[in-house]
Length: 455
Ligand code: ARG
Image (cartoon, rainbow, N blue to C red; front, side, top):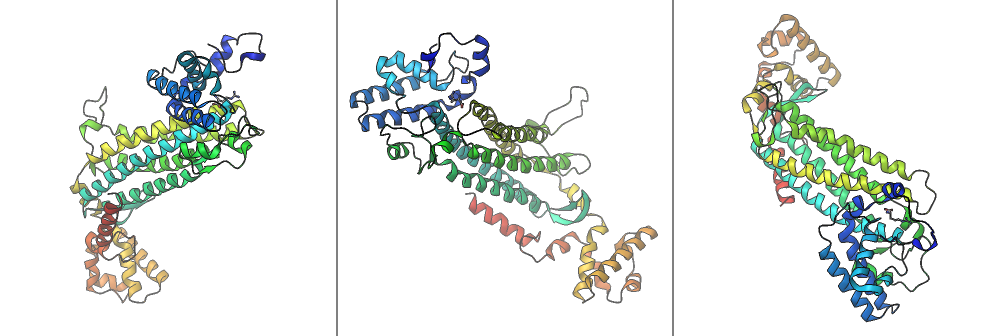
């Protein structure tokens, strides 16, 4: 195979260097984007008259033909990279005129242009997959209905909450992730072509023409930054790292809820796995794999940051190492969101376990505190009083709701017989008044909001 740069070399490349440096096994994923760039480039060269219209048409037709013939691209074909693969096949297909396609450009500007096109496509695919996951979560919240569970902080029972409220928290978090990815689009939407290897071109390259053909709304303002900065990819991996934090936390919650200790959810058999030794086991591997795979996404971000630090401007071959990280993260993200949507859609709830979780009087301590505050007892004093009652009940080996009103009044004169009405999960959640709270009316309104937004 002939390289795109052989002229000044007397010797063939050492086979080890080939193995070490060739990148087709990774950058074949840019094939479609690269063909699109090449077609736009061939048209532009004809448009500015640096090649004839006839040559331009030959290039375009040749590119269209090999684009079909080379699919599916063989990642192990013996070519240095995707650029060389295309150039070589184009020469075979249409002969010498193919040698004009690379006029006025370098692989430095080419690879980053194709990567930007690839990334726009991946952002849109991940956006769609995220929307599907949000919709699945919303359906799960509908199934949970008004079911109340013990909300936890520090994994200790805190206050009653709607399980639907907990699920909608993840809809809100994933929706923020979606908007972060969409914000990034405006920084991806910059055309690097015309930068050539680093300094720009003395040929009359028509960048506006190219931007229009390739749907870029801006042209890079600095050729050195255009070929050598990977801020847009770093931001993509940062956005994915944040998204995976959310996916991992969601997974952890489902793993807990699926455990015998919580027992809130049942995973459909099609999305669970067994044990080779213990016949009774049914395990939540989808959630565990998401939680585990989060590690490799963080690793990719760390790798990309480290690859760039200390690189002198402009292009350095180190930058080739951006693609394995970005491609793998994009692939893993899409797949994880797809399996998560399916798994969530088939989950069922064990509402008896919900009830068990809230059958505990301590959960209403904050309601007791706010009862006193409504009667104008200073907050800290009320806190102290309820704390003392909790301790008293514990020492007496009783539940709070078993204490007679007489005892309550020994701790505060403001307690009346209605204090005993507070020990109901429904009363507790319905008492919440703030926007965003777990009050069933607000939770229902949130559900309706998301139903509309995700339509
Ligand atoms: N494979 C390279 C990359 O991914 C393409 C650009 C190579 N440029 C060069 N001068 N060797 O960055």
